[in-house]
Image (cartoon, rainbow, N blue to C red; front, top):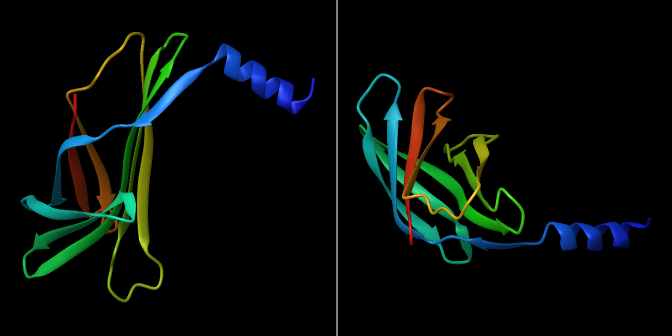
Length: 141
């Protein structure tokens, strides 16, 4: 059996639809491991819809991160019918750093029937694991 035939069979028996979900609300929070958390400001980049510049006040400094955030929903004809893929990747924009600090996760949730999560809360270690950057996502219904 050739590769094209396998691809057609895969699509016939595992047909699905895919779309990225819009956010109703996003909140970012920066929290050092030994201190109080602070809210962050963020701005989506127009030419890169899934990339977000996040700026967090930390004493007299401003911590800046580039966040790549996508929530995708896949609907399959076979169980589990609803699957969500979440990409939360963070690059720490450290001034003068020769190599950027990067951390990220890709998470999958599989549901037997149609489900829309109310909200998601994800955390990544930043600043060499001495702090966390947390995002809370409320999805549009």
